[in-house]
Amino acid sequence: MLFQQLQQTAAIELGWEFYVPLIAMVGMIALAVPVWAVLGLGSIAMLVLTDALPLSLLGESLFDGIDAFALIAVPLFILTGDVLVRTGLSEKLLDVADATAGGFRTGFGTSTVLGCGFFACISGSDAAGAAAVGRMTIERLVRQGYPRPYACALVAAGACTGILIPPSIAYIIIGLVLGISASTLFLAAAIPGVLVMVAIMLTNVVMNRLNGYENNEVGFSMKRWVKAVVDGRYALMVPIIILGGIYSGIFTPTEAAAVAVVSSILIGLWQGTLTLADFPKMLASSAKVNGVIVPIIAMSLPLAQTLAILEVPQGFVQTMTSLSDDPNVLILIIIGILILAGCVMETTPNIVILSPILLPLAREIGMNDIHFCIVMVTSLGVGFITPPLGLNLFVVSGLTGISVLRIAVNAVPYVIGMFGLVLLLAYVPILTLWAL
Image: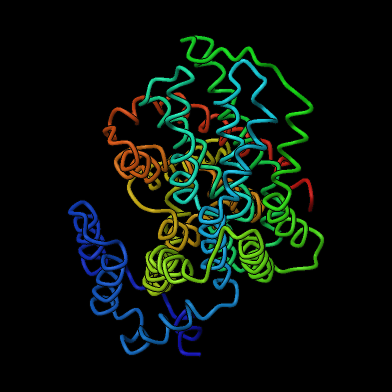
């Protein structure tokens, strides 16, 4: 293939032909131009000015980039999450979470985060989790004594588990870009995903101790828990089917997503909570979300190929290692780059563009590829509750009318908590490599 032949040619010296399109892309992002358009225009400009690849290959690159079996899982997981919301099964999951953790002093706050984790096991999307769980919990959190801006911040932070707890769309995409099995990444992410959820719970507990937001005196009831589990048994079947099928090797992630869609639809039809009239709205809603993700992936890949031809990753490694040869310092630099990138750009383009650039540096300092992927996705997850992008902040702001800035201020403890966990995962690789 021509691209493979070009990859073996000598590197092109970087000059204004590279930096002008790069600066123009940053400017367009600052002006709120859609990310897919920025990436597409930047790719074309860089290809034309540098001659790194023939422009005639752009169409082939766009098609090849999205012509992947693994990507079919993305719309299927999004659709599964939408089905759960429309059938009321998501509320059953929240009832199970409330019965499980509701007896603690900070019971409903903990239950909310656990509910976000349950939803993450199905949808793989943080924005969907923030919208679904936020609709069901924010008003109740306020009644429990939480200030509304803090309740919004809690839901936004809890929904970060959407890209961190398998099955995660982010792991599917990074696996596709770097050629790593999504099933392997899901298995490696199991403990880190749970740890993220626990870190958010503990942060809420600390904030409650300091401010006395909630003081639940009901206590745990086994009878109530059993009733919630029995009532929510069909809702619980969906994550069990997904994760059980993937981890046991029965399904690939894409096949598990298909089975989850069919299972949740059949449950909804059987219980009478879903009708044929719901299908057009449900499919349209999921298509809109998928229509945001796929163009970004398609437009990111030509840019990533151009950067590879120009040997930007190799140059980046040389620059970073010239600053320091201490692996601990370089890990901090990688984390810093990822968190800053997550603050200003969505996860999908960050993964497609930055993972091929940063992976060689990670390998240079001895990081395993799987370990790097988990650290990268977790670091980018911090950006979901950090301005100026802070996607989850905007979702809950849209639900409640509370300004993004007020929610962001209340989310600071969660940013600190997640940053601490990122450092733990980065410097204790056994937490991600335990199953290898």
